[in-house]
Length: 559
Ligand SMILES: [Zn+2]
Image (cartoon, rainbow, N blue to C red; front, side):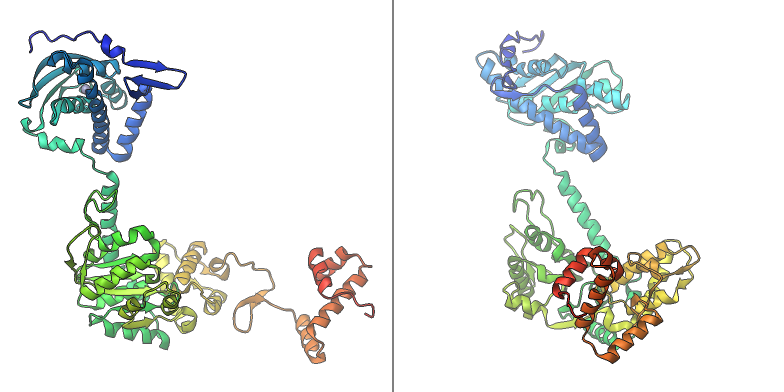
């Protein structure tokens, strides 16, 4: 069936096309179509190439074309089922033209559905895609009609019932005056397999996900150079915790690190790992509070392909990645109950089972868990499994909060100062005296992490070559001229000598403070002739504050 390849009339296909302006729909037979600007599609194509790279863009566009071809193949038998094979096949090229892809001229066609044989050559003139590609990128080395090729492959594959791969022998994007395509079954091409991935569903998100997990694993296995240095401290509370850690390092015991947020639990876990026989193995850290509940099991234990929607590939969990090393589970108190049950089984059996998997995998992992919540309390409230707590709490180490190791603050602060001056290429002369005092007497609710943040900010705000002063460390704190340090060294408003004398006198007289306040309020109101706004000004408060206080202490006639 060759020689003079000609098209039958396309009036049967044109009849399929309906513009229903009233309903806002365009129909090709029973399928809704869309009229798009090639300029818009061209811009999308360019965006794709820029954001996901040429290969992924090519795959996505090939798949889009493939889907179009697949749908159009449905018309071939429906419209020309009673005609010869060749006329039936020509529905594809003719529809492709009608849809505006290019002017398609058949050059050669041999098709035998029964035998699964196919060979075809077609010429494309004025391919919209070659034109769009050349407009953006100029003449290129490789053919660029990806959606068009996808269409040819999709249409022919559906028609033949097997994957037919079309390639461009020539392309107008490469400087030829037209494109020429050739199609054969994929295994008839010597390099066919290399093209198969253009048709396959391969989620870029999965690739990115896998890569970011690799990065995460690499990051967590890199011991930061300062981690040893940051375990700085000579206070008894700190030395106690440090000794416990060192003694546990040589064993395989599961360690539970407790302490307030920011005390440096991860640094302790890293130090434990570094001091252990597993030091050359991976250190993998997971923050249980940072992962959504529905993802946490997949993260920890891994997934088999197809375990749930979106699980395109099998993936190892953090347990498997920590094999031979240490797994650090931070904020373990935030693990949802189902994940707690699984974790318990892993600790009991030394085996993990991937989500959707059937068989257990042995893992050799040393577990270090950490929490800043009271796990015993969580057990009582039904939020944490008692049996899991027993398993984790074999060797608890409580890291003291910074305010209980005030003796370590200065050494830590100086260490951090040199670290951040190096990091930010800054020269500073050191801490101002008041700054150091303020550091020593701050409460440190955020512990070492807060100290780190504060000093980094101080280094950035301090003038080049100058001292880090209080206002660089605590820039949000108002620093009026009366500011000073109270007897405990906390930042406080400094009272004048006169005020001091008055307070001393009040204490000596022994009048209750409430009565004294009432008297002062009354005096102010009296002096301002009953004008509350004036009285408030005298007292240094607002009118509303005065009104509120007067309500609590009604004016007394006898003052
Ligand atoms: Zn082309």
